[in-house]
Image (cartoon, rainbow, N blue to C red; front, side, top):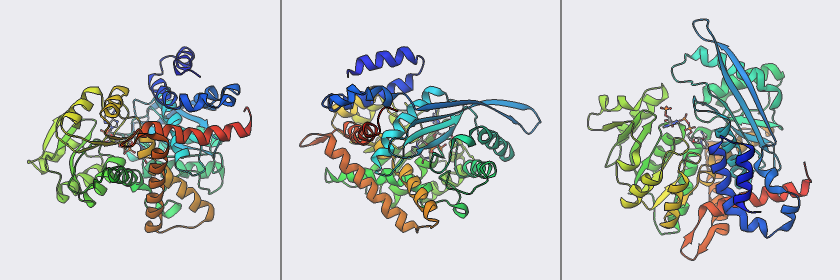
Length: 445
Ligand code: NDP
């Protein structure tokens, strides 16, 4: 297998899908050597079967807005690979959603889920529906219309969706409710459910907390701790806010938070009071530009991302894909940043990733660092199957153990010299090996 040849073929067959090409190229570059050591993989054309999703559903979602007007959006579900367990991955509602973005996310999810050690295949879905500015009833009608198309393709042992950008507990509740009505059964078909109907304690916190646990493991390899460090975080959604909460609990200073409108900077770290206000503001759909109205000492930068605005020791991009480019990486490195742990999926562009790796800083790709979310979804599935609920402490301990395990795997496959671990390589190879071996054992499907 030659990465360049596979990529040329994929680009020809699936043009205009830049995010999908970007994600595949990163993985293929990492695994090429390991793949070519096993001629059986090539004999069975494993690489093509691994890169091209098992199946894709695309459908129109028609719904009524509050003025009685009929609106139409596109809906998708990408079932990428189920070699090691039922398809599993979130649903994203955002105006930017298209097939390329969902294919990249489903591809990444396959390796991430493999890394967790739990039995979950990879999937992703979503719609170009933009929830911001919609009423609660409009969101409910949209979710119901979306599931009226998708419900036949999902199930507790088939495909288990969850949340992602624009899809939180409210949206999961509406989708789960409609699924339950159509399927006429109560099963753990969604994760991220409310606590009164099968949700797991700690699921909302899991992605952000898990990223902090992974970061702690990385810092330990250099005798460092989160305590006292300045941490720049982007986003102000589920992942960003719980990351910030845990960083502050561990004695770190959160120096930025942002949304798609702009960034708020606190050069010496947000106080608890400021953070609590932002948390509350975001829970009812407030915007970051409103923060200085309450705290005039905090500065808001419209249209800006955090990376060039403030010095930090650690960066945790937690908003969206390709939100940190080569020049941002240069600014971070020049400011003394020595660790980057990704909460979002593929937030750093390939140029930025190269700069981090060349500088030999601690750099954790999202598929390893943010795997705590889906891992806890896996724990929710286990609790649903047993019809039991575990305590927050039990779930948190398991989450911590899983993140330590993922870190150990990245080190095992990614150590390139006594003083440097390439976590991208480590995560990609470790994730790949398990899926590849399961696919080989199951024959050509
Ligand atoms: P949320 O919808 O809760 O929050 C997303 C945040 O990112 C919001 O502050 C949003 O701002 C901002 N954002 C979204 N799109 C853009 C954009 N194009 N440019 C700038 N800012 C943007 O989503 P999550 O926190 O759940 O997800 C964040 C990232 O983490 C995504 O990459 C997701 O795939 C990944 N992830 C999420 C997991 C989870 O458990 N939720 C698990 C693993 C990964 P605004 O409100 O203005 O749109």
